[in-house]
Length: 259
Ligand code: DAK
Image (tube, rainbow, N blue to C red; front, top):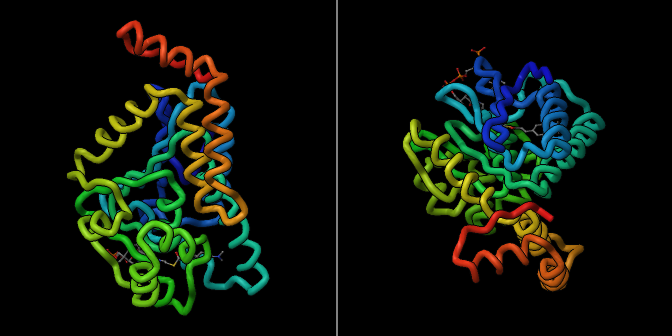
């Protein structure tokens, strides 16, 4: 499959999606959004894909926001429609059945931070910088930054970052819980792959259940406790559960099949 703005590589079950517009610091334009939707469909439908890793090309940026040159002339109507489309894409990432990790390798600003926040969790290299600078452009975030940032770092911290438009460094992002860990630039991708490899050794059904149940906590239309009862109960009917318990009894490593 051909992509203009993404580098896509499938290796050992991990689909690495690298945003690749280095001259624009990997800024998100509509074409890139379309390609992200296309690659997510591929990842969903392809059994060989077990996990996804999002990162940015070059050493400077993960994604420096939506493409300012492109959105500068949008009308109110266009902006609303594109915001809805973006929400839909990022919701797909959030709900994705296979684990999705963002390896933030530089600037993660505006739409870039919003994409990272839609991923299941995030790690960063020590040169990474995070912010929602929309306020400097007379805007507010349009890809759910006002919703996911308070969810991840709390209302007060989110209000401050959104209102000041300030950037924070990787260490501060870790203190706030925006990223789980910080590595050197060289170690970022190997660390991300190591984490995903560990997750891929577990039952894909249990991983999917965790994604669904944790997301339910943050969904006002769902009762997460009820979702847990259902997903937990259904686990008892899976081959993976039987395999997990048998492997424990037989003192061997389980081999989960996702059934
Ligand atoms: N869009 C387009 N080009 C960008 C860009 C961006 N977001 N960020 C950087 N670039 C381009 C620069 O214009 C420059 O291109 P040339 O001038 O060389 O052609 C090149 O990347 C290198 O950038 P700099 O020369 O500025 O590099 P520095 O190291 O000096 O600075 C920086 C790095 C990241 C601090 C700086 O580039 C910067 O402040 N960038 C803009 C950050 C930003 O404000 N991002 C946008 C946030 S607002 C919407 C939904 C959502 C959104 C919008 C609309 N709708 C549904 C309609 C979201 C908006 C945002 O994300």
